[in-house]
Each structure stands twice: as structure tokens, then as C-alpha cells.
Length: 415
Ligand code: SF4
Ligand code: SF4
Image (cartoon, rainbow, N blue to C red; front, side, top):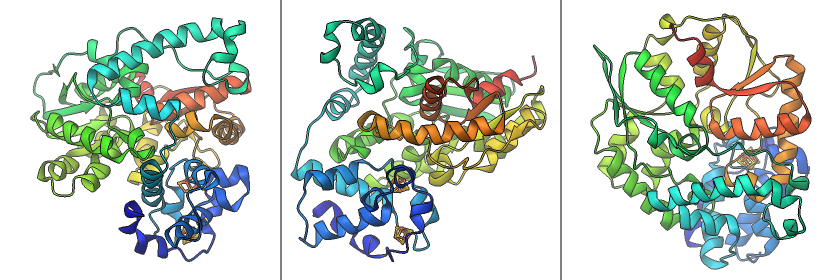
């Protein structure tokens, strides 16, 4: 198991205590040992020891993980479960090669900007045609026949962010330059959040640079075990992003921030540029709170909200208090905590595409916690969580609406 060999000491750190059962979202639904970090570690160890083959059941256990990182953040031995799962997936890709639509599309579309543009244009067309086609006899030929076609995808706008903002948005007396990295979901699905980011960063006193040719951060490839494709994306993004003079690199997608900051360093350990880049990367909430006086520049209005912690921000980057402080200031103390705020919403990137039924059950638990607060709005700092929670709220018939933190901050900028 070449992909796992380097991590064998990490795997053996698991003391089988079971503390991960309390926080694991897949275990919370499945209540089965193969759906929790402890069981997954035991299976991987058995495969490494030659006691278990790369069976379909093993593959399912390894790919049924949401990669939320809650186990790692709460593990008394500090076992890096997501890194081990990623290595096991890479091993499966190398030795077993189970192809599927999600994997095929990710490999074909995430490798360069043109393919990415084409893929999202096709998705926009598919998104428009899916509903009408689902009502015809052709429905049985459509992919992703989730829950009687109930999944709510946002409409994909014709104009991505790369066609809406200039390469540099300047202000007078800027304190420095921030390079805004949008990532795919903001660029293609929620460009209005990217436009808000530029406005907010300008308001906080910074010029904002943007690279129209930025690639996907590559995390979907890493999660699918496509290590070589991920390495190639990482190399090209490091070269693109380090080619722009900027004091900070800021993203409003925690998965992108975590990937640019930590995962590129792991896959390119010899690269000085990857290390220099990692030092500049910030989530936009931590940047606004720690590097600017944004709170003092707010023109806040009363609003009651609750907050959902994105896994890669809370467990991956340890950023929990920053969005809360900013939101509380922007809503004049209107932040109400929900129960299990840092429990995964079930999105998990490719996880929700490969396991929509399970990811939907995880989301329903989140919806119940949102409803219990009585808040009319749930705010999160991740465009993926926004999409998934928005879908679950609509399916449940709840009145609450989901927002990104930047949509709340944008409302609270002095006119
Ligand atoms: S909490 Fe950590 S050490 Fe304990 S069973 Fe889970 S992975 Fe193993
Ligand atoms: S990463 Fe999340 S889903 Fe996967 S084993 Fe850990 S807690 Fe469970």
C-alpha cells in the first residue's frame, strides 16, 4: 500500500478509544462501526496487513466519509484521519480504478481553465433542462435521480465572477493589496458573493487583485484520490498566485483556503513558492478581524441570525470566533448560537454527489438545530455549506433562509 506506507505511524496512533463516535456525522446517521473514524482506521490497517482485500465494501467505507475533520480535531491521539482516508482513496484509485461519473467529470474538467468554463456552461444548460426532462419518460436516463429529483441546485448564472470584476479593484490610500481567490463555487455559482468580497475588502482599506485564469483549488481531485491530477493543479495555481504582487491571499471558501494553505505544502514539500504562498493565505473572516478595522467601519442594523461552522474553517483552520465576532457586530448582537453548530452539514464536496441520500440525512439534523433557534436566517462562511443547507431548508419547508457571511457584511457597509 504505497500511498499509505508513509502514514503507517499515523494509523497506529489510533488507540481505539471511540471518542470520534460522538462527533462523526456519518456515524451519527449510520450507527455502524464502519461509518466512523475508528472503524475506518481498523479496516485500513487490515488492508495494510494483508488481512483484507480492496473489496467493494472497503471502498464504500472509505468513500462514505464526509472528510469533515471533526474526528481529527477531537481525537485524543491527534490521528490525522482525513489524510489517511485520502491516502486510502488514492490507493483504491491506483489499484482498483472504479470509474464513475463524478470522478470522470472531475478529472476531465478541473485540469485547466477552459475545461472548467466548458463544464460549468454545460452544467448551466443541464441545470435548466433537468427539471423538464425529469417529468418525461427520459427521466430514467438522467444521472443523480435523488429523492424524486428534489435536490435544489442554485441556478448557474451566465456570467461568472471572472467576467464581472477587473484584475485590480483600486481605492485611494490603500493599506496594501489582497489577492482574492474565488474558487469554483463562488466563481461560477455565486458570483455575487465574489462581488461582495471585493466591495468589502475595498471598504476595509485594501486594493483587490483577482486572477481571471485561476484554476479550481483541486480539493475535489484530492478527495477522490486523484493525487497526480491534484499535484498538477497545485503546481499551476502556486505559479499563478505567486505571479501577482500581493500582501495577502484571501478566500471566502474555507475548502480553498485550507487547500492553498496546507494541502499544497503537503503535495509540494520542496517548493519554496508553495511555502511562501501558504504564509499569505487567510480565510476572509480571519483577515477582516485580525488585519483590518472592518468592525469599526460597519453601519450595522439589527438582525437575528444563527451561525453554522464550515468544517474546513472550524476543524481544518481553527477559525471559529472570527466569523462570530464579525457577525455579532454586523447584526448589533443578533447572533444566536445553535446546538451542534460545528457539526458537519453533510455537504463534503464530492461526498454529497456520491452519497446524496446520506448527506441529506446529515443535513436534516442541521435543519432541526437551525429551526430550534427560531432565527429567520442561518449564516455560514462557506459557499458549499450555503448550497447544501439551502437545499435542505427548502426540502424541509422551513422558513429560514441561508446566507454567506459576506452577504451579511455587505448589508452592513456604510453607504
Ligand atoms: S478518537 Fe482518535 S484515537 Fe480514538 S478511536 Fe477515534 S481516531 Fe482512534
Ligand atoms: S472525517 Fe468526518 S465523516 Fe470522516 S470519519 Fe472523521 S468525523 Fe467521520
